[in-house]
Length: 85
Image (cartoon, rainbow, N blue to C red; front, side, top):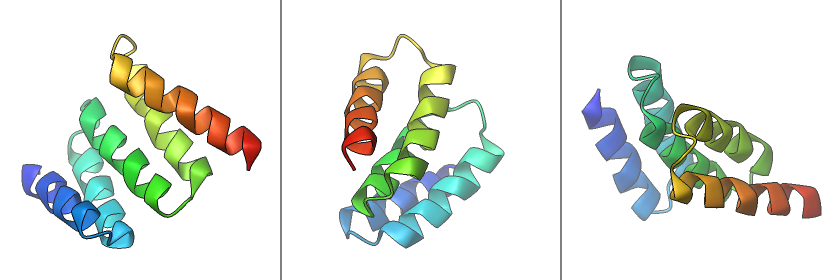
């Protein structure tokens, strides 16, 4: 499972967001309770300017870890982008 997440991060760094999302979604399927996978997924959707799916992922991350300031801040940012789009 972790291999998918690591591949997703590598693809993100190469700006290959479609491939990154594919790996992130596989990771979250095997690790549905890991908020970090959803956070990574939201960043990849953000890279594609797909704010709706980015929000879905970050909302899931915040649902799992509501006290994680990084996730909460990212959600606020995506809420702003989505409402301005």
